[in-house]
Amino acid sequence: MKSVSFRNDDMAWDIAALILTPPDFDETKTYPTIVAVHPFGSCKEQTSSAIYGKALAEQGFVVIAFDASYQGESGGSPRWVESPAQRVEDVSHVIDYAVTLPYVDADRIGGIGICGGGGYVLNAALTEKRIKAVVGITPVNIGLLFREGFSNFDPRGALDAMAAQRTGEARGKDAQVNELLPLSPEMARENGLTERDVFEATEYYKTPRGHQPGGATRMLFSHAQKTLAWDGFNFAETLMTQPMMVVVGQKIGAFGAYRDGLEIHGRSTSSKERHLVSLEDWSHYDLYDKDEPVGLALEQMVPFLKEHLS
Image (cartoon, rainbow, N blue to C red; front, side):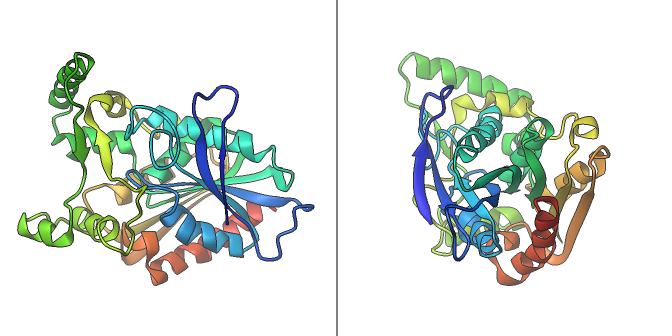
């Protein structure tokens, strides 16, 4: 695994990434390559590289797992901005970098993403046709989540509060950086925050199981307005032309991945080939790192990606 950073001509900051390579990697050869997109509130060192990136590299793929702009080790200011438009554009920036590498086959590039990253990579594939096959793993349509649970089902009220906060910050007020999760599973229990996705996210991000310094689980409140007006699946009926796969767990939680995965699969009628992998007895966060559900996902993903990036 190699750490890199790069900046394209139309970027104002560097993107930080990890490049994972297959066993017996030979720089004089070319390889099918996967761009791996991390979840909302996550970073490249977590599931996108450590779990799925590592497994796909072992299967013969080059994998580029990167930190989103404004997050992790990537540049961009202010920090902890969750910008769907930028997150999707980051995918294209990573592909711009990938195609300059002599060992990347520019005609065999795929994309995977987990959670919010799944929604982003599926959205990127609608217009980024250098992606030849795409997999959304427990994908979340972040715009819908913000309009619902993350705004307490009051998106207009949230927008008014964001507007007031941004005006205050422009006039010198301290930034409002929201912590998205309880600080520990114990705190979650004490405060009755035991809904499946909230609690399991806390178990992942706030314990040694998944914690990484770059996975801040924070959001700059004043810069989240445009997220509420974003929809990751717009125009999927006509623009999702590539082969696609969606992996979901049937244990449903508040972040909506099961619903969102079924929606994008159902709407992508223009896709050359589409697959829905629905795993009984597993949840959203089980698919981040637990051996059995991840193994079941990879049993479907690896042949799919090999077939379409051959």
